[in-house]
Amino acid sequence: MTDKALFRHIDHTLLKPFATWSEIELLCDQAVRYQTASVCIPPSYVKRVYDGYGDKVNICTVVGFPLGYSMTSAKVTEIEQAIADGCNEIDMVVNIGDVINGDYAKVEEEIRILKRACGDHILKVIIETCFLSEEEKIAMCKAVTNAGADYIKTSTGFGTGGATIEDIRLFRKYVGQNVKIKAAGGIKTREELILFLEEGCDRIGTSSAVAILLGEQGY
Image (cartoon, rainbow, N blue to C red):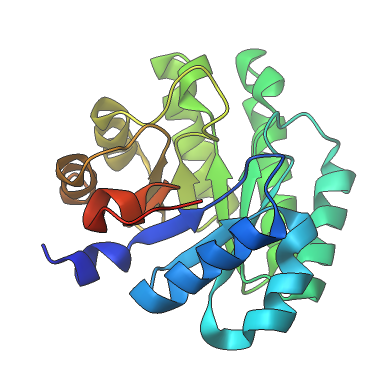
């Protein structure tokens, strides 16, 4: 797989809480140069990126991030503001406590409400696999499918672990046909990028793609 083909699957990501505008600019410049699938950035930078880069980059941001336990109404407000600011894709975090409590119907309903708020914009659902049992992961595959979300995503990158091939295989087995898969967290080599894509991922979230593929300095 060529570098160009790999970049088309990359959500070029910078979500550290102390990210500066100069670092965000570098991220966006790299995204334009290498034609990544999107830039995934903090909500506070969405409007500034949209004003500076317009339709040169596809803007993704996060909601309920990284802990997931915000109220549903707060997550809806975050989505509405992000879309108004120029965002095209939303990566939301489920309420992990609700998942572990077995309240899968409540989680599914929240995803459904947030997808409604997104409208035609893409909604990716982060289930934070490192905290979940296999049974809970399977339940989330079903919830994401039933709620009509566009993607299921492994991880925030802020938990105790990131994406694993085993989880991608589990997702592929249990999500519906209309749900795509995004892996994020801990993917650090070209070989891993290719393997995750071959196993069924449509997107890879990483802050390291340029360094991995081209050896260039990042932020």
